[in-house]
Amino acid sequence: MPFEQTNVKDILEIKLQDKEFKEAYDQVKSEYRIIEQIVKQRKSNKMTQKELAQKANVSQQAISRLEKEKHIPNMGTLIRILNGLGLELNLVQKVAK
Image (cartoon, rainbow, N blue to C red; front, side):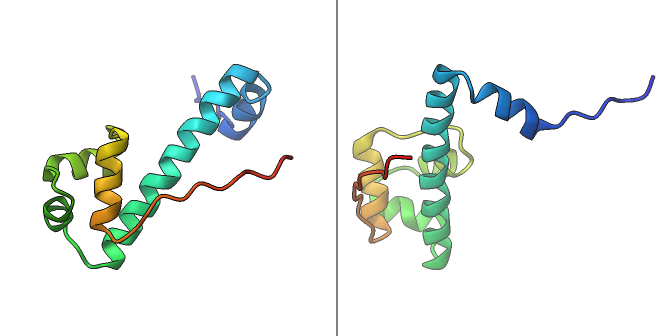
């Protein structure tokens, strides 16, 4: 029996029509964008996870879990990590679509 191809984009398009699913999807998408920026900045600064952990006063494991997208830290830890990278969190209002 041959494998049937699945188009994930089509499935996602259908699921995003569900309001609750879309809200959860948008939240997770935002979290992953923040993580991507943290990793990008750490690498741009030529810092190891251990060096960032020391600057942020968190464990290297906390940095690793964050970067592997296995754990979203609490706000205090996130801010310490951002401070360790020389970054700050700014909020901007979304433009309504």
